[in-house]
Image 1 (cartoon, helix red, strand yellow):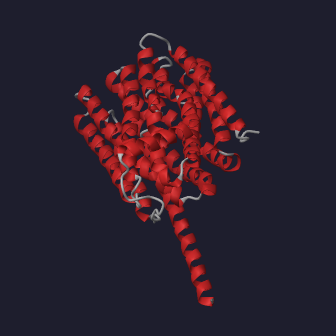
Image 2 (cartoon, one colour):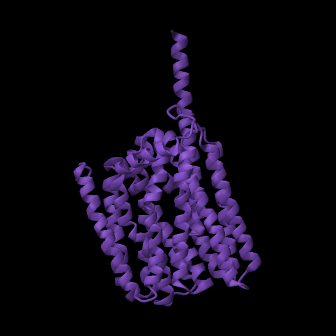
Length: 422
């Protein structure tokens, strides 16, 4: 009996040690991923680079659409194939490696082609970023399941918030470095250097998953469902998450305007080149400061209440862009601060809400289905690009505020019905 008690204690201690190791490994990955992404933020760095290459709002909006589609479309097909696998970590590591290679290749292409052939460079940018975001979409499927397995439900807010808090100093440091690189390194080598450093950061981030110990899933069947059975499973899942999808779509209108705040600042407010770096810095700072607040709110009040406050801030951003533009490009610094805040909040809130709704054995399918059903968001930036060919930025920002405000009201009712909102 004493031996059994000793073995049980050893087993508990071993499990706690593994949980700590996995928690720390997940934080490591999240921190260095944030560092890499801070160097190449789509709403600032990539949008500015595309505008420099093409001088077209359609290209800016179109690339945003292509990137979201590339990250979304593969997910539902990958989910069906990966979901029955008892271990999903090898697939995640493969997807991350694909992303590292694509960013490294893009850096080399920018160094090689430079600004001699801007059209060729623009298409090379589209190609490599499409591969990068497709890799991210593929990685999302095993990532959601792995985090669901290794992070207990009561610790997920702490994990997401802790990941963002740890990432904060690294993100701010890399954003400040990006500011200096954009200002002091000649174009387009400044962008090449940013992508090269981002590739290195992502490679370092992947070490977290190499160190992680993934539990073997015992609730899955190691066989791929026939498509007709899988389709019925998806139909049932779509009914379960329909409200989540609708509020993501409505509040997703906030993403429609995001690639254009930097273009607005440069075209209408005559922002200098170094302003892009400052916008990036305050955006990263906003996400870092907000991370602990969002995490605490998720754990204490639930994801729906947290998403309501996030949506309220999202509604205010385009209105502030209009109001503060009278102060010149410097007036948009608070706008980019809040953009960082709500991008972080959407990530924490919607991931937490999805994990709450998804059964353990179907997390991959729920993640893929959620991505596909929110795909219309991808076309909003492209539509905005065409819209700006005939209308004003102010009109676009007002339309954004109306739709996001509607989403805020719907989240309020959703949360109130489940008694999550005080």
